[in-house]
Each structure stands twice: as C-alpha cells, then as structure tokens.
Image 1 (cartoon, helix red, strand yellow):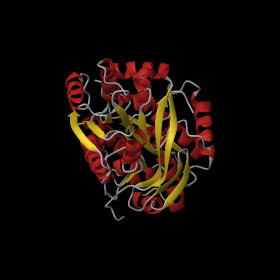
Image 2 (image 1 turned 135 degrees about the vertical axis):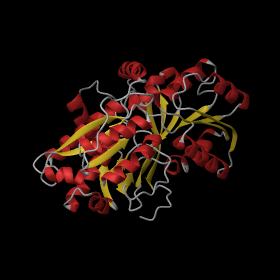
Image 3 (image 1 turned 30 degrees about the horizontal axis):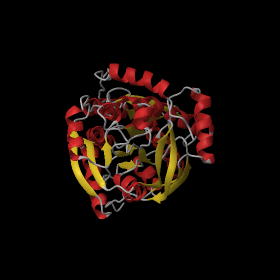
Image 4 (image 1 turned 90 degrees about the vertical axis):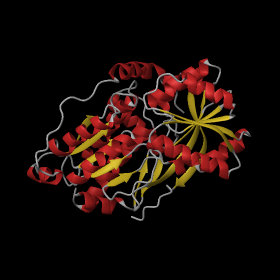
Length: 405
C-alpha cells in the first residue's frame, strides 16, 4: 500500500488554483495537410504522440502525473525498438479544463504538430469539442479518463472507467457492507456528472436502495454551502459524489467543517483518486470508499515494475500516479503495440488491430474491445490512515455499450 502524499499535492493545488484562469498561448493554424501527410513528409523523424490534458484549471492537478507517464511510456516504447522502427516523442497540450481552449490546442497538435495519434486525458466537454477536429484530420483519438460512456465513434477508442464498470457491482457491495441504503447523489453539471448519477440511481433502485436527494453544480464551483444544507436536510446515509478535482476538494473540506463528513454520510467516490484525496487531507478522507480501475497501492508485479520505473525517471517526490494517469500510460502502450502489429500509423489500420488487443497493464489485464471500450479490473479502495487499502476487486469488468464495432 502507498501513503497518499499531501505535501506535493498541496504545492500542486496552489499552482493549479493560481493558474486556473490561464489558457495555453499560441493558437494553431491549419496548414492544409493531414496528420498522415505530415508524417509521410517527415519520414526520418520521430513519430509524435499528442497528449491533450489539463495542466491548469479545476482539473489541473491531474496533469503533471499524466504528462510524466506519457513520457515514461514513450521512453519504454523507444527502448523496445519504437514504432515501425522509428522513435516516438510526446507533444503536450493544455486544455486548461476548458473545451474552447481544448479545441484550439487540439488543432495545433493535429495540424501544426502533425501528431500520429491524439491521446486525451481531460473532461468530456473537451472531448466533444475536440472529436470533430480529430475526425477531420484523420487521426486516431484515444480518450483515457473516467467518463460517462456511450461513445460509438469509429475514430475514438476509450479505456477509462464508465459508470457501469464503477457502480453496477460496487453499489450493491457498498450497501451490503455498510448496511445502509439511503443515498444522496452530487455531481458536476455536465455530461459525465449527469450520466454517472443517472446510472447510479438505476443501480441503487435495482439493489433495493433509495435516492433521497440529487444536486448538480457547475464545474469550477467553490462555494458549496447551499448544497451542503440541502444534503443535511435530506439526511442520507450514503453520498455518491461525481465531482472533478478542485470541486471535489472544496466540497469535502467544506462539508467536513459543516459536520457532514464521511462518518455522517459514507462516501463512495468515482473520481476520488490519490491526488484528489491528498488535497482533502487525512481527517476529511478517513474511511471513504472510492471505485476506480487503478490505485497505486495495488500489489502486482506489473504495478511494482511500473512504479519503480516511474520513480527512477522522475524521482521519489514525483506527482502521484493515479487511475487517470495510469490509463494514459496504458493507452499509449496499446497504440504502439497496435501500430507495430498493423505496420502502419494510419488511424483505420491501428484501430483494426486495437480491437481485441490485450496487455498486462499496471492495474492488471486490460483488453481493448472491438466496440472501442476496455474490459478491465475495477477496485474499491478505502482510505485508512492516509492510505488507500484495496477492499474489493472485480476482475474483467466489461463496459455496458451499445456500440457493435
């Protein structure tokens, strides 16, 4: 198990707060060439992996570790011979947790930088803004974080956890383990928050639970007093927050100070990864449950090797690896494996090899399905003394999807 490191997170959180209003400078210009044409004209250089992530804004605390694991993945790919005999390099773009900024930055990555693949670790709002740009550039788009599911675009592969993976089995387990059944649902007011809570309500009802209240808040909310009062009036036994980064930290700190801590309403977080938990502090997080596809405390040979390599490259005080960053590492390694198998970096060729591809990831076996989702393990962790302890493992959890391939 690994202790949640709050010292680094607090520095990161201060930097994120200061940078929350900043956007990436230097908008892209469209050169008129597709990414494939750019790569062909630069056949002797490194293949570029475009990483679009949040280095600032409410989700900015997720960016530093994501950037690091992308660079680690590239280093390992190069050490194994690269992709089609060529080295790879990572080009970073910051969406500033803003879909308009994300669209502009993605345009630069796709057109000016001519990346061979676009890897996205950002909000669903940014994904929806960026997907048409990736489609018009003819570039494969790999979307890696926790999200709402339901995407069926042939240009998009996803390996982030979706509500059916995180909640379908976890909600009944939580009710059985705690003996509690009265839930309050709280989410950010956009696609992921709304879809997650809609799914949660379905699973709660099916397992004999009851939803006693629901609330949504805009992304970037800092004052949760009115929401806390609403929750207190509903008097739930369980609380499921679908909040992003800084919003989650602000809510939980304010709720704890108002007497609505975890001991009053048991939390089941679905984006409460180690950095977010560290930002809340150990008193606030004690006893919380969190459901994700990876925790740094996983005791597997693959995870041990991954973390050893990460710390060797970036040092013992490097940003904590979480499910969000680990999924980005997995996506980049899978893309390289599929491109080598296809003998091509063309989107349609790589996509054909990705469907059905399995790899031994730090979290365990991950299979990229032909419906462009990922089957993977899901873990329930509980925070105890500042440590995320794995309480339950659900292996080989497929995503509910209506996509047929």
